[in-house]
Length: 168
Image (tube, rainbow, N blue to C red; front, side, top):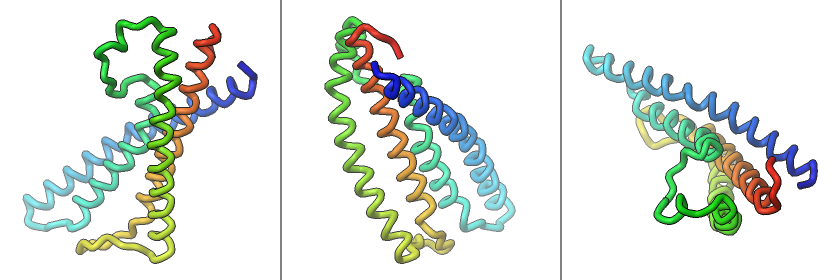
């Protein structure tokens, strides 16, 4: 494989590793927000922001942690036949099926960018009582989808290297 592909794979995987490790800690932030929500309900002092903030944190956790999960191969896979195949057969199937995933992710990214532009242009707010701006979480979604595309391409390059008998 050319050196630029090896460099691309290493840089993307290093970036997704760091972002994914950061995203793991968002779970503790989420637990803190939900604990605060529970405590305020016990003392009859409703915090109107907690439920929506918990949803935003969960979206960030999911979107930023997805590429890391894919990198660690801890994603859910229909494994009826896959585990029986040789590593070379798996690489062939993965190299072919990656195009379906890329198609889906690119369509998702186009929609997310369009929605983010709208949110920024019109200062879109949530229709709840708290009324937070929506643009920050939409930006996180665009970043997460972009990182997933980069990781998917890195997997494609790894599969091509396996098919050539090389390792990255």
